[in-house]
Length: 209
Image 1 (cartoon, helix red, strand yellow):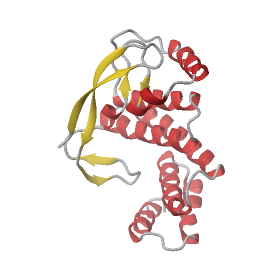
Image 2: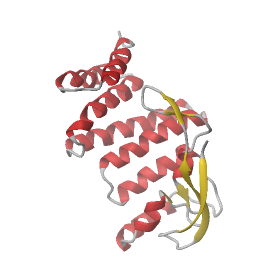
Image 3: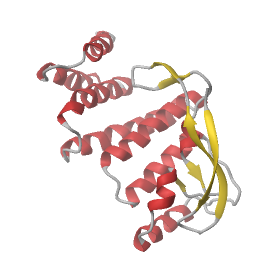
Image 4: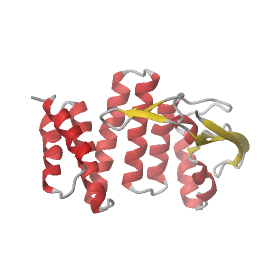
């Protein structure tokens, strides 16, 4: 069962304080082939990101605590102005993650973190029944930032099989089977790849035949 606790946050951009809820527990059943969780009691993902009702800043609880650099805050304020936020507005889960990903690029977060935000945007988009184009746009951006993270060697060696599997599956879902096979084939070059990951890879690769 999804569990929450009340929390007071102060926005680093407009300094407004507001009440929100932190997710402190949830249960996951199975997962889709792109690792999208199938939660047993609703989708907690939107609640992991907090939206300032004053200016529309979106971030994790830690972002509200850690964002202190004046130059970064100025960049984010300019970005938020382009969203034409109405005070007291609300955002769905997918849009929270899309905006958080944009903000993450302005705060200098690693490409892997940006990629994860776009990936979770695709999950929320699917769960919320958004048009498929919205999910595809976020998926393309997730691929872009995962590839940038690979080029920057942001992942440990142990993580690389999972990253290449995920890139293969995202490319498959985007319809680029050549790139999907390229990443799926990478798993054959690693030692001690988990059996379940190879089984998932083989199942998804078979769908492209």
